[in-house]
Figure 1 (tube, rainbow, N blue to C red):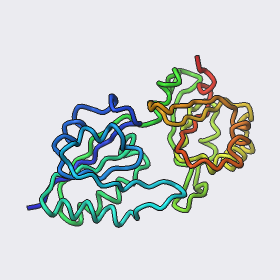
Figure 2 (tube, rainbow, N blue to C red; figure 1 turned 90 degrees about the horizontal axis):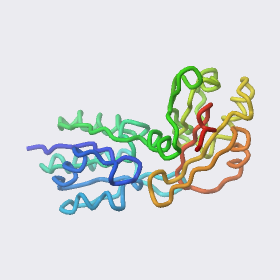
Figure 3 (cartoon, helix red, strand yellow; figure 1 turned 135 degrees about the horizontal axis):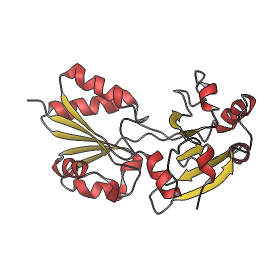
Length: 240
């Protein structure tokens, strides 16, 4: 008999931001395949499970996606309760679809447990909302990296240069200099507020304020592989 796979969102890192359902699934799991950013204290909720690290980090040796998907299938076919633990919200830039398709092809049942995405957590830590009537009338989440690690060619620059939107860039440290140049060329003010958030909700949390131009300069020759989140828009300058 096939087992069952729970895609569990671990949130941005603080174990207290796990949902009750996420904690229950971790406690019942026999196997947990976890990302790097979902490790640490969060895994304490899975004390009875076999733990398998499958995280992917830019610039570091990482398991191939096909291998991760096959591990899910193999453990589920062995009849185990499997948790695939993903950072933030597992449906947000987390390669969830590839793993779902592998399970569907193998006839394995699954569920998706949503969680706090790092964008919401960063805004809360910064002390701002993500939207405001009239001045920040919408919010948009994008990835700053395509499959090769470069800036995606198909970005809607007109939408991303909207001065009345809050834009959150995931995985964008390496490419933000190029993105900022395109935004400014499209008419976005170079002094549009921006912020860079590292380690949101963890002991290593560090949030800095910039403009899009000064942030582009700051990241131009940056070599840090530490994951970070970039915000820009009218609210990014409203840090208390």
